[in-house]
Length: 250
Image (cartoon, rainbow, N blue to C red):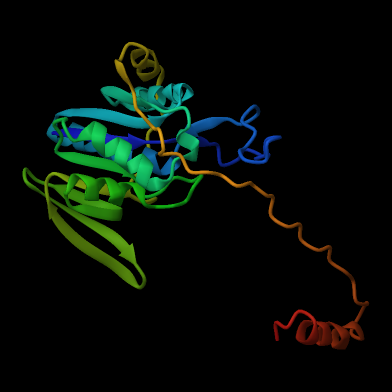
């Protein structure tokens, strides 16, 4: 089984994000970039499928040269090879542009299954996986938390309000992976050393006209400072009055 896993490099969720001097992008100088956490669930799912059914895992990432580090992490986890679609302005590309670039690079490759995270934690758009499926004209099951597969079909469960939904599709297909599907493994020393020797194919893509125009970035407004309305039981009436007339929450 040939599996393609779509990967994105994103800022660490614990990073302190600062706006760059131009006001249109983030200051990356002090930001640690990592594999998108939801994509780690996709990589782990691919590894488990390979262990059960055999085959090969290829990581595909659209991003700048520095995104090679994210691919090396995925290779250290156990993927076989990787493809970097080089686009220095990838941070300004919207979901449709990214999906188009990925689909164009994938369409002529042999694959049985495409896996990716349900969303990237930086843009939170939750669109690329389904857009790739649309561009390739193959089925998609999104936000899966459980899956089983045979030679020609895949069955997956996805959480919905009040329960779970079971969906089946024929292969090839795209699956977007949700937290709870598995517990991603950590790269061990052997995997890290082997990753240095695994091939990464680099392809320059023409992203002319694919980048969005960023008008500007702003920090969220600061929260107003709290205030003390009194002490003891006598403050209760004043608090209720403020909640009703000023905050309008009761």
